[in-house]
Image 1 (cartoon, rainbow, N blue to C red):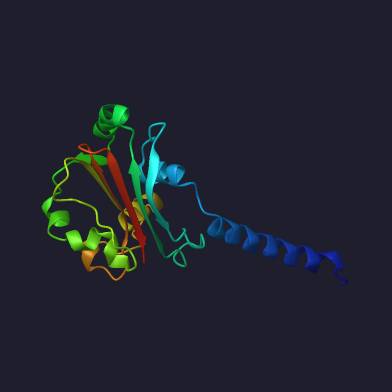
Image 2: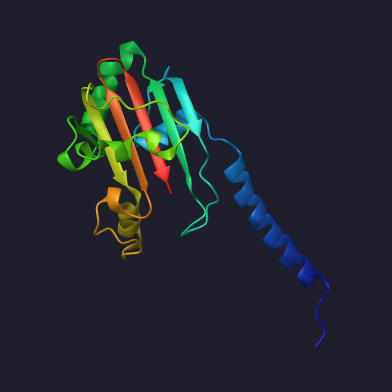
Length: 183
């Protein structure tokens, strides 16, 4: 049986195209404001500015691994939009009013950016009023897939791998802190 000479070439080109698309998404940095909106699960007000942008990128989009990295953003909500943004968070199912629940408050070190190394800035949890967000990515993935892919019996801070997004909005100064860790 004779195989068309173009068949192996097409297969190799398709494989290279797939690899290139993974690399492009991993190497091109995302706009921090859009990234902040995605991480916070709410639309950010127009005029929001970037105070801190520390993003290692999402890694390669390969299920089950190779996506290690972190993102730490501090965004400034415009003063005239703080009240409106606070209402947006209040109406969101993802955001909860401060103070933190005991599970997070007692393990504050585990949700601080300094745990990743190389980030000196901290999230002012104890002195803030406003709202917080905590998304356990492993739990969320299990719910989406309809089965237990990741073991979540142990609390997030005792797991081998940290995969979460933490956010805090300080309604006193309008700063939005967003911290995503995937180890």
